[in-house]
Length: 184
Image (cartoon, rainbow, N blue to C red):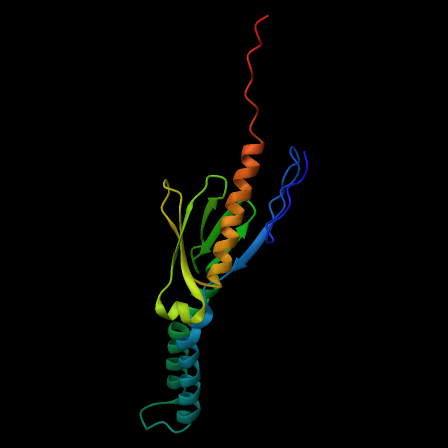
């Protein structure tokens, strides 16, 4: 059996009987535009601390200003950044892995072999930024939402290709049905 020709950059399938290793195809986070407000808070707090440090009215002291700035920065700048940083999606040749959680990590997987439907949702602002939300549903488990994905069309195409190749490989590995012997 010969190797099929690849069309449009589609990945080649390995020869029958050869084990297929799991390779990472893509790893990404949600769009970074989510960090605009935390960045503005960081700039505003830095400016306010620089302005008010040493110029506070009589009952307040500088350590109070620094403590308040640290609390504001933790909840309005650092925590949103950590939440964004902790949520990742990984596409491999065998599955999609969603990891999230800052303090309590959660992991969820969806295999390509079982197959799933891919729904693309895009709002007006997501279209302007080239982002979108993908909903992966296999009909059994709860749908997996990949929200605010940058270059969503490329990720969608990658997922479709991986499902197709995984199902082809799974069907190639099935044993052939046994034919009854021909009557003599």
